[in-house]
Image 1: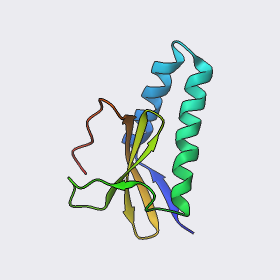
Image 2 (image 1 turned 90 degrees about the horizontal axis):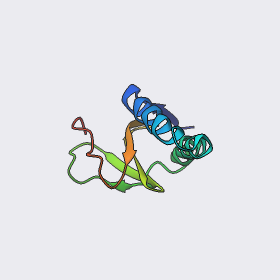
Image 3 (image 1 turned 120 degrees about the vertical axis):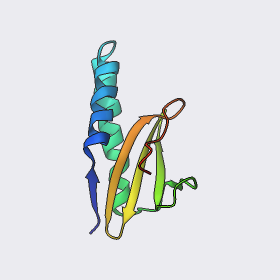
Image 4 (image 1 turned 180 degrees about the vertical axis):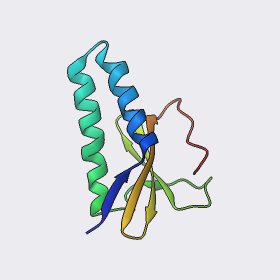
Length: 96
């Protein structure tokens, strides 16, 4: 079975998103972060489901969840989430 690892940076992004949303609507913040985690769980059975990020020489892919994107790297049977952020205006992490 495949494994999903959340990098410290990806976890910080989700914490920042939660804090930002929780200031106005704690329930929406919880739904958004929980939904991001649940969306990423689909990578266990289908690690190629996101679209390929062609600007990277590595196997970075992008998975969308509402207005958010989850950038991840497929490494054999491990999927490592690199970053998570608002899809419209958040630049992708340089390490990709």
